Length: 364
Image 1: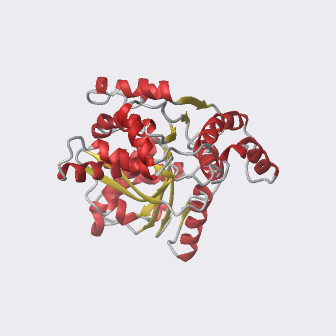
Image 2: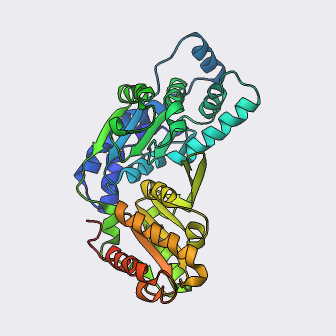
Image 3: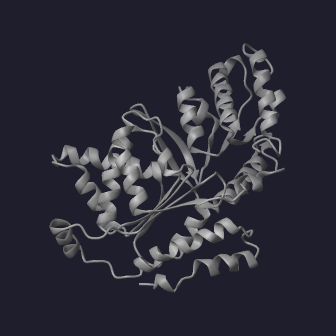
């Protein structure tokens, strides 16, 4: 196994700055030493499975280390975590969006209950612990009561079994699941998180995600091959060429799916967002999970696709109010997208918002 303790993330970060791959940022650099104790811990031999089960049965070993990195959007939290994961040696590890991971946990709980497990969380958490020593979560946020009711026991079981956890979030721990149903039952998890994990705020004043888009073209028409290539270029720049994975957002017993997502950037086609019976709550969930949304192949809008057009108006309004950056490929420029039929007058406001959202200083 590669000796993780021999890695110095600060030196690697400085080298990337010298090479022009990164811009210098004092707040980012100050956070890098916080990863070192976790690297050193991961470099130590993991207890064998039989010994680990014995420890769990007899007494609680010291929990694995953890880091909760939070701050405003676009401050480089995910980039720092990716740098850490890339240099964490050959330990079994997984880097995953928090929502996607929790969906897997819920599926595992359902299967365990069907098998008659007396405590479904135990076999599910132990399976994860047997597979990885490091979990890296991106964009941790708790908006669903089903997540809120299990995440405390899940983290405690995982860290107690020797799984180090590093997570990024836009929220300070005390604001997790804020105003949520039965939040009092969630508060012990916040206390556990603050006790067992190092909590650090990235206080950079620069939003690098928006910096990359400042002054850049974000509306491409017509939606041809050249537009598709530009959309892919922007996606690759914002995600570091990650292919993205489906993002499942739980919502009142069902889920909303963003076809591709990574590091707060989502991507999908018009019909995937507006061709389905989605409403304001669905779009609010999407806006809450993303800071950039890329929508491809917006068609001409008219009476023939009136329902889809109305959903598009609702989606744009939601993204506008949430200050989510919108990047699209469309059949035409906003003024020529909806030229006839019912709803034309209402669409004028959407055109105005779409134009405003294209400006370099809109998010600022």
